[in-house]
Length: 193
Ligand code: AP5
Ligand code: MG
Image 1 (cartoon, rainbow, N blue to C red):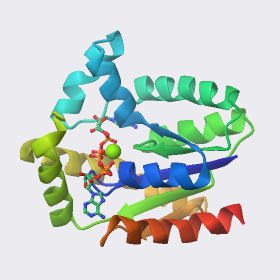
Image 2 (cartoon, helix red, strand yellow; image 1 turned 45 degrees about the vertical axis):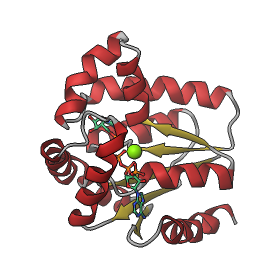
Image 3 (cartoon, helix red, strand yellow; image 1 turned 135 degrees about the vertical axis):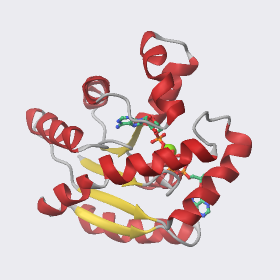
Image 4 (cartoon, protein in one colour; image 1 turned 90 degrees about the vertical axis):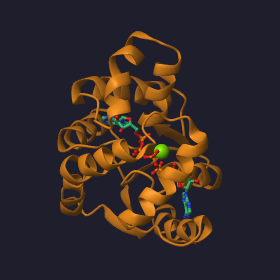
């Protein structure tokens, strides 16, 4: 089972690239951001809890997201999937440690962390453009700035964690969607042989 982690700053293209990876390698996509936005839209108990974190650009608490992720992993494993792409998880060191623990409990392992790298100016440009149509409560300049700050302080440290595990791969996320996808395929093909 192929387990790909896709990381990088807000707007780097995690969701866009995940869709293409899912098609090519026939694996499942699990985006914690999408998951949480569905909970908010459906006004569930979880949705009510996480709504203000998301619209402020802050991370939802580790214990909550770890529990949600763990439940979804169980559902996917029961489906006998070829693999999973985790989009936007882990996002803190605590989440990374919890994920590796979940994997070993399930006799699985994460294969690779793809860190899509895009300069800040371009990230802001992409997100503001999407904000014109997305309806996402976090696609406005103030919240985008907070999301970027949170990314640098809380999420970037996971890069070192995965470097130490020998699983970190930086991907240049500039250029067209297709160009970035080509760079990703080169890395994943080395894993699936
Ligand atoms: P999440 O939904 O994960 O949002 P994010 O990390 O801020 O990233 P985005 O989804 O905005 O961007 P993306 O990298 O997917 O890029 P995309 O492909 O869309 O998380 C949202 C919130 O949920 C968090 O802030 C937090 O509150 C909560 N949350 C989620 N996970 C959590 C966790 N693990 N722990 C705690 N809290 C959590 O592309 C962006 C735009 O650019 C699109 O319009 C796209 O069309 C365009 N684009 C893509 N590629 C290119 C390209 N090459 N050239 C030009 N445009 C491009
Ligand atoms: Mg996304």
